[in-house]
Image 1 (cartoon, helix red, strand yellow):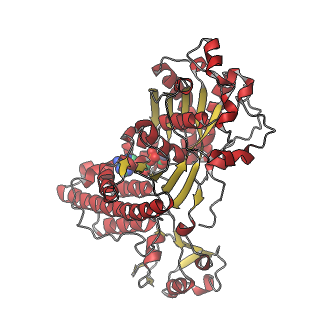
Image 2: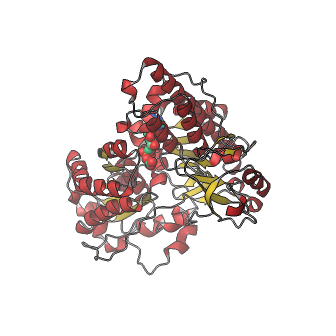
Image 3: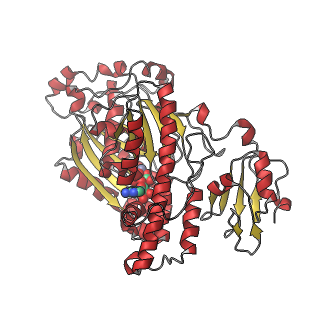
Length: 532
Ligand code: KG4
Ligand code: ZN
C-alpha cells in the first residue's frame, strides 16, 4: 500500500565492505601468530572501515561476483552468537563459520499468545526482557563457551516489532561492547532465506525464495547476499496470520502456535467439503491476500454454529469433524494460493535469472508438511528443486541470524564493536518496516492509473460485504466485487480497496455502510455522504 516505507534494499542499508578491503588485516598469518583457534577480528583496529569512508558508494563493487560459501580455514573458525527478538520468540544460537551449530535456544511466548490470541507488543517486549539474558547464557553454556570465545554478534534489527527488536539489539550491543566484538545487523526475512544455505551446501545464488511467516508473505529472487528483487508480497495479511486466526476461531490449542494446530486437525477433515474461493484469481501477479480468506473462514464457522469457547478437546464428534473440515478446506485453499503465485514467480524468475535451480521455502509456515508436499509438485513441473530448512529452522530461531551474520561477515559487512555502554539517549537502529530488495516493476501492487483509486475504508466493525446482510441490519450487496471480498479484513474493521475507479464506484454504489472513510488515494467523490 502507499504507506509502505520504501527503504533501500538490505545491501545499500547495511555497511558494505568489499572483501578485498578487509582481506589484509584478516590474513591467516595474523591468526597463526596469535596462536588461537578462535578468531577475534576486533583485535585489529584495521579491520573496520574508517567511518569517514563513504560505504554506500562502494556497493557497486559488490555485485561483481556472487557470494559462495566455500571452505576457508579463517572463516570456518568464526564463532558467532545470533540473537533474535523480532516478534514473539526470544532466540539465541551459536554457529561456527563451517556451519556447525554449537547450540540453539528458543524461549517461546506461546502461553502469552494463547492468553491474548495474538502478539501484544508491550507484553512481548516485557517477556523478551525477562528472558533475554538467560537465553543467551544458555546458548553459551550449551556450547560450552563464554563470551570471550565469540568472534562476533549478529542480531535482527528488522523488520518486526520495534519494542521487541530493541531488546535484542540492546543485548547484542552489550555483549559486543563488553567483549570488543564486531556486530552484524541482520534482516529477519533475509535470514529465513539464507539459513537454507546452511543446510543445503549446493544452494548457490541466484535462487527463488518463498518466505511465509506470521507477518510476511514474500516471493523474492535472491541474486546474491543482500541483493533481492521482490516479485510479490501480501497486500494485507500473511498466511501465518490466517492460520493463527483460523486456529483461534476453531477453538484449537494455541500453545504451540495456531499453524501446527490447524495442520494437525486438517488431517482429519475433508478438504473439499467447504467451498472457499482462492484469493486474487483475477490478479495476474505474484502478490498475496489472506484477509478475504480469513473472513470466509469466519463466516463458515459462524454458519455451522461452532463455538470457539468450547475447546476442540471438549467438542462432540460431529462438532470436531465439522471443525476439521473447515481446517482442511482452509489449508487447501490457502496453499492453492501459494501454488498459483509460485508458478507465476518461477516463470518470472526464469526470465530474469535463467540459471535458477532452487525454490527455497522458509518461515514458520514452511514447517507445514502439506505446504511442502504441494510446493514440491510445483517445482517438479519446472525441474527445479525445493529446499526447505528443517522445521525448527523454519520458525524463528537464532541459528538463522547467526548464519546470516556469518555470511555477511565473510562478505566484510559488519560494524566495529560498540562502546561498552551506550549513552542513555542512544537511538538504536531498529527497522520495524524494512522491505527486502527492490520491487519488480511487473509485480507492482498497483498500476499508476489504479493507484488513483486506492482508498482505505474504515468499515463499521461488524459490517461485511459480498452479498450478505450487515449486522446493523442494512443490506450490503456488492455483485461481483471479488477484489473487495478478497481484501476485507473484518477482524481489523478495515477494507483495503485496490481496484479501478469504476469498480470502486460500483462497490460504494452497492451500499457499504461505513462509519468513517479515510481517503488516502485522492479518489474524487469518495466521502461519507456517498455512503450509508
Ligand atoms: O517465521 P515465524 O516463526 O515467525 C514470524 O516471523 O512470523 O512464523 C510464525 C508463523 C505463525 O503464524 C505460525 O502459526 C506459523 O508460522 N506456523 C505454521 C506452522 N508452524 C508455524 N503454519 C502452518 N503450519 C505449521 N505447521
Ligand atoms: Zn520469522
